[in-house]
Length: 132
Image (cartoon, rainbow, N blue to C red; front, side, top):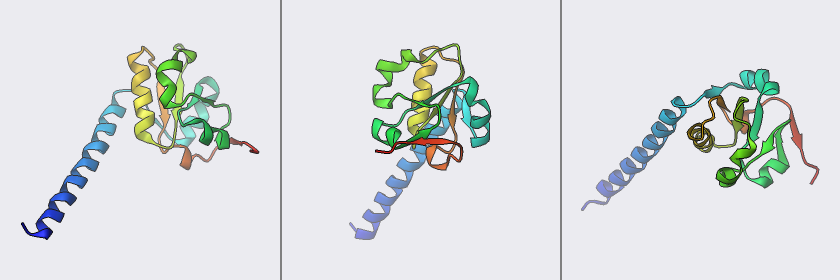
C-alpha cells in the first residue's frame, strides 16, 4: 500500500473523530439549559449557584468570584450540595466537560442549568486568585 494513502486515511479518521466529538457536544448542549455569554453570566450570577467543575488546583489558582468548586471527577458524589430550586451556572476550561456536568444535573432533575459559553479562559469578569 502506498504510504500517502495510509497517511490520508489516518488524517480522515482523525478529522472525522474530531468532527463527531464536536457534533456530539453541540447536540448534548442543546438538550440542557444553554450557554451564556460573559455578559449574561455576569448579569444572572447573583441569583445563581456558580459551580467550577475544574480540578482543585486550577480552582485554587484562580476562579470566578463567588464560585464553589465541585470537580467533575467528584460530581456524582457531591452534586447533592447543589440546590435544585435555584439556577446553576457551570464553568470550566472545557465546554465538553461543562456540558457533561450539565447533562448529569439534568438527569438528576435540575431544570435551570446553564454554562459559560467560552469557558473560564475567556472570562472577563471578577475573579479571585490565591496567593499560594
